Image 1: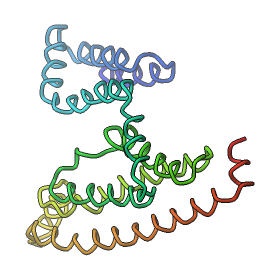
Image 2: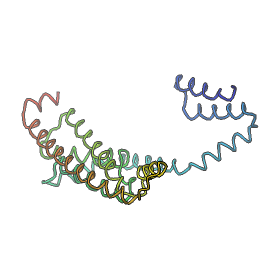
Image 3: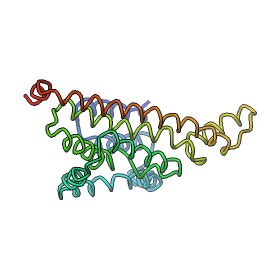
Image 4: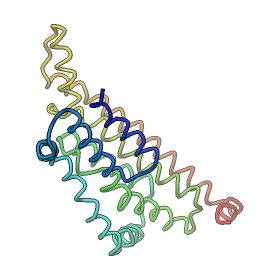
Length: 231
């Protein structure tokens, strides 16, 4: 039962809001020692686990780079670029990103977009700038709605686009499950059947973004609404 003491350390540490990394390391050391391993063997096991899953940590390397770009004015540059495009609207810009996100996801390039990499530093500020360039002032409630729409575009496009790629995890999971039950299905066949769903998602969300453009324009064209939103 002493081997399970690491779980207690994790629960207590998280409840006390202690540094998560410190809690995990202490819990791992305690579990290893309770299992009869010496300190060297425990540290070796921790190092092996980190080395085996090091590719997972590579994703986090992009976050400091994005932070530096934002500090250098990435969002301001994106806003200025969109502000110069007279025909750009929030809905059109988000639909363009939807199409690009879905096509790249269908090719297996699911890491090219994402909330941290694209939506927060680029897509959401550009969508806000498109609204501001046409409607001038932008109340905070509508600013939050635009950000929510930008996040939704990324989620929906990725969800319906990635299944077209035959080597994606969801397709392989379906193939494996069916094979385990005696049903043989080629991954390409499943991927092809994902295309109608992706096209339908693009059409439906395109209509939704067009309606959002109209609601945004109609709401912010009323002086009372605009004044109330800026208070």
